[in-house]
Every structure is written in C-alpha cells, then in structure tokens.
Length: 322
Image (cartoon, rainbow, N blue to C red; front, side, top):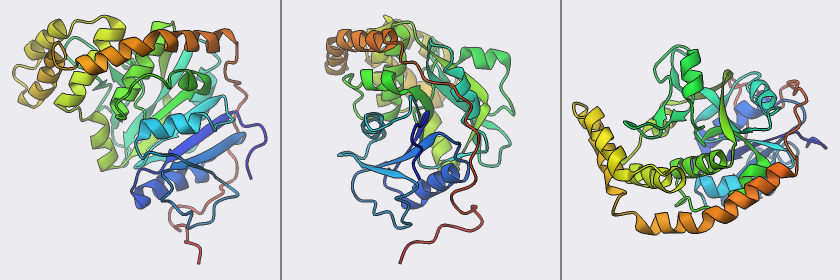
C-alpha cells in the first residue's frame, strides 16, 4: 500500500520498452525503503499487466520523453525528495539512504548516485562535469571507485538516475528543455546553481546500468553539445566561441570528440531561438526557486529503513495478470 506520509517519491518512467522498464520497476520494488511511494509515469499505453495498483501509483503523461514525464510526476509526488530511475537502470539495496541524508543540507538541490555497469566491475559515471575541454562529461568513468577529487568535481546528476528536491523541480518547469534528457539536466542544474543551490555526488548510492543505458548516458551528439553550450552561455556566461576553441585544442587528436567540439562552437551562431527562449524564462524560474527555498520547505531527512521485498526476486520474474 502507499505510504501515508512519504519522504521519498521514486519515479520509474515508462519510455516505450516494456522489458527494460519492468526490470527497473522490479528492482525498486525489491529494495523499496519505508516512507516511500513509487510512481510510474507513462503515456497511457502501459496497462499494468502485473496488477500493481496497490503498490504503485500510475500517472498518465501526454508525452513519452523523460523531462516531461519527470515534471508531470513532480506535481503528483507527495515526497519532498524525488528520485528518477529510468529504463535500463536498476536499484540496489540501500541505494536511497545516502542521498536522502544529503538533503539535510539546505543548499543541495540534487544528488547524483554512483552508476555502475551491470557487472559492477567499473563505474559508468558518478555524475557529469562541465569544463573548457568537455561538456556533460562523465566523472570517474571506467574506474572501480571514485576518488575524493572525482566526488568534488561533479557538477550535475544524469537525469536518468538522479535525486531532486521536489519543490525545486516544480519551480523549474517553465524552462525550455527541448524535451531532451541531457538538456533538461543541464538547464535545471545550472538554474539551481545560479541561485546558490548545488548538486552533491553520493558514492554510497549504487545504481546499475545495462549496456544500452550506459551508452545513452555518456554519448553526446554534436546537436546536443550545441544546446548544452547554449545553456552554459546563457546561464553561466560562458562564451561559445571560447569554449569551442578550447574543446578543439583539447581534442585535436581525439577524432571521436570532434563532433562535440563543433557543436559547442556552432552555438555561437546557430542556436539563437533556444537561447532566446531560455533568457525569457530564466527570471521567473529564478524567482520561483528562491521562493521555494525561502519557504523553508526543505526535505525531511528521517532514515528510510528498507522494507520487506514487495515484488519477487529477479530470478522469479513477475507474472502478468490473466
């Protein structure tokens, strides 16, 4: 049954792939902490074949993209902290405990868990960072564990596996994201940072990623790089030409990164419409976030003890209802 006073709302969006979605959902139900509600956001096409209505709140969203589903869920969530776990990512035992504790710091707007490959031999990323030579670059990728320097260098969390203050997400809903996952993460994180909030990396929180999910997390196309650079230019005042030049110099021998370098450079002249929309909405978004923070409605941080499994173990898959 739903927790009457949830501290945490775990959102598992249905993005079109039933098998990948159900793997993520089962992992959450197996490791579900107390004082936690589980929300499934979908476009109306998912029919709850396992009859989980007593365990899960189903919310219909008009769109299938992740940013829209996250914002839709944020307005339905009862928890003061919201966690997103997208398709292809799996929860592990106790994965919410560290992040929930992090929100006792009122300057924390989001928390990034440690995303590991499914075989748990190496990290996919501890989060992402921005720099003169890279954009939305994975932190600690390929390492067995993150160092103190890695933890400190994280600028933002990948939206696919992230923890947020629910009120902050609600405050940022007007900002344009082009309905793209990486753009949304960058826009929301940068806007929160602009008003004094930050992202915290939490290495004790482990989320597993299958091969497809891991690839989606770390891949940045030239088009996405252009939009990400626009976010940096508008919110952080970073010159696209200067950033593009540094990116070219840093990656001159890395042909695979030339597309990203070109995308960042081209933001100087070919992304005007997006930049204009972003500038127009920022003042109201900043006001909304400041208001939410001033209200003092920061997340409660009571310990979330892990409940007994509410779904069968992965070795015994859920059976669809007749």
